[in-house]
Image (cartoon, rainbow, N blue to C red; front, side, top):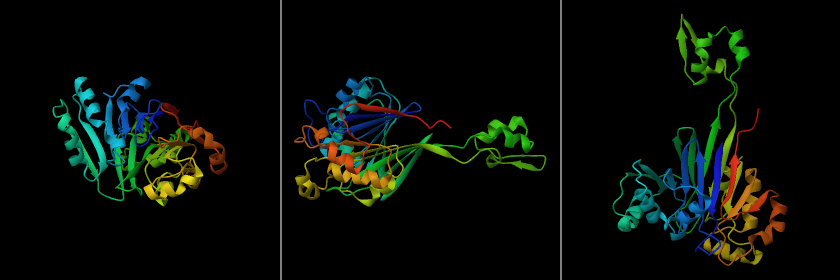
Length: 303
């Protein structure tokens, strides 16, 4: 089970009814936050979730609407007597940017660990899931992220019996162990079927529609993309500021073969993003104009 909550959907500045863009993912006891703009703490509280269990914070880029909420978040974690290390992931310059922000949050009871992204694409592996960062096209260095939860093949009891594999080895083989006994080798592929479909969520804001988004978002159960403008006449402005319109996001989702598209990171001038869904859904029918706090629980397919 993978919990996904879009805490805020605003771009540039928070509004009374719309916090700045931030995404929380929860899987297998771990919490991952992507971006931490002003108001993220309040959005978490409104959701009923605590910031203290956050294990990883990823940043797409270092514009204020994506990172200005970090000092307060760190202080809140410290005041909650957090002691576990916190991992931060982001483009080059992460350590310098965060340490500058920590001028107003200098003393923390936990360690901060930094992982700066050095490549066009870079994968970070954790117990049970992977985070992949991929470079996009904004006015500053910016990355999107895909979170993938792999799912192994099903244990085949009949095959195990047919090959006379001792039952005491079954659980070890399911864990990927290779066992040798009495001159015979037992390998996981002897009893485990092909990998099954896992779970995948891709998040990307502040970019033009480049090929890397569809490539890395391919097959995502959920694709979360900025739809900064809904007005067709604002395409030129989107190009100038290196953002995407809702229609461009829909075309990316279609190219990626995503299951569902959530739009986010709206311009402050875009008061009613849902008003444009009729035309957007002609491009990608399963599009949602997400609002703050939109949440879904993703589960593995039943097989």
